[in-house]
Length: 213
Image (cartoon, rainbow, N blue to C red; front, side):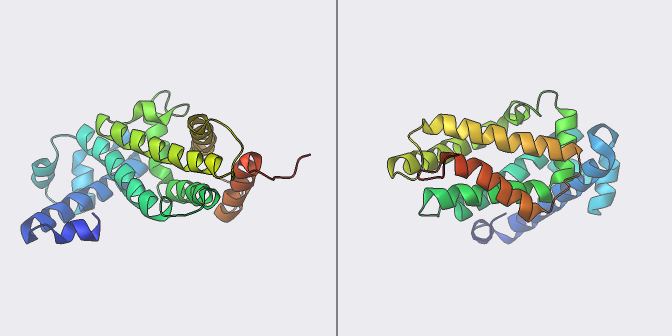
């Protein structure tokens, strides 16, 4: 929970939200170790150091906990995205920051992404299809924001004159392909190297004034 949001809540509600987050973080760790089908509420309770009954005060089922872990990851990502990417003045810098954020965030949650792709048929091709209903609006908001970055870049001459929405979808396809691949195969290069290569491969192809072969 963002600090500024937590400060607006009463003490009891802050404690409740902190416990809820602890349970979700424990659930993510158990899902990573055991997979979705192998994980149990009892194991999650033990990992979180809460009684099983306490977990049911927050979540009605393992299925809900799994969906809420996905939502937590999405909300945390969007919070950082809005502060580290959308605050950039130059579109090229913003897209570079977005590539770095997407890959670093994936690296932080790589084990859970693997479970997500294995559990949700078709998610390796289009992860948005497997998102819980509460995440769909967040994803649409993200796509609209990224499209706005590309639109600004096309208008100010930073990027080639291409449809900003199509640029966003191409960007998503490229990033999602790498994420899906690395979720099942250990990357052979350091994260910083992968980030720079994808920046060169993508931004280098749409940037105005790039060198042509």
